[in-house]
Image 1 (cartoon, one colour):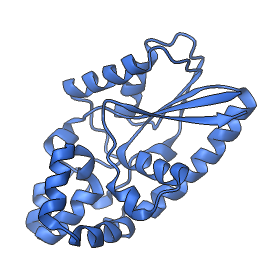
Image 2 (tube, helix red, strand yellow):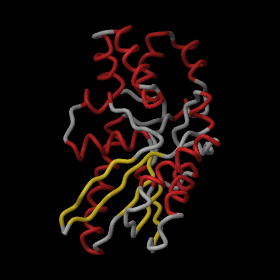
Image 3 (tube, one colour):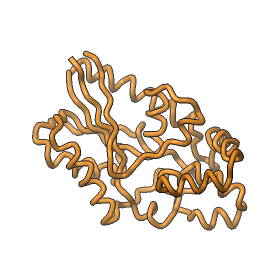
Image 4 (cartoon, one colour):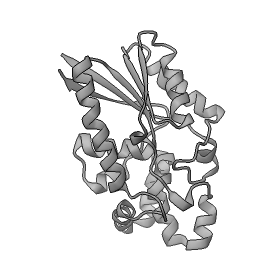
Length: 220
């Protein structure tokens, strides 16, 4: 018997739209963000979902709510903050532009790997790589381990996501349930690294859309 996990990112928020560090700040979905959530909902409409999980932040909760409108069979909604976004600490609530002005272009390119790559189109990402070339790889390695003041590095995010996955799989096998998870860009990035056994370089190049989902199976 195979059990299913449907993992998706929350829709666009006002901080996403206006290029602010969000992290654990509770930025709301934009009208486009609700449209993103409804697109995911349509794609998951024919699936069976027994349990829904969100991070406790409203953008995650509201995205899950749109998905579950098609799933009266869902019997429980759980909150687990281990799937929250990466904390940007003292940078949370500050604009990308103000960061670039204060710290310079080099650090701003690091910022792109912290937060902004998820918002680039495939064409935009290709243009970025073409412009900065091999230097991008060094930035990826650096951004993986560095953190904002009082914030998190990606290894810190990976540790909490790994613990979440362990508990989730155990629960799914015990209860024999399919699960939908409304998560965040960097918690999904950490999840994909752990589950798909990716390298750091592969992890930090991942792009997680606002309007699609990832499916994983658990053998029971």
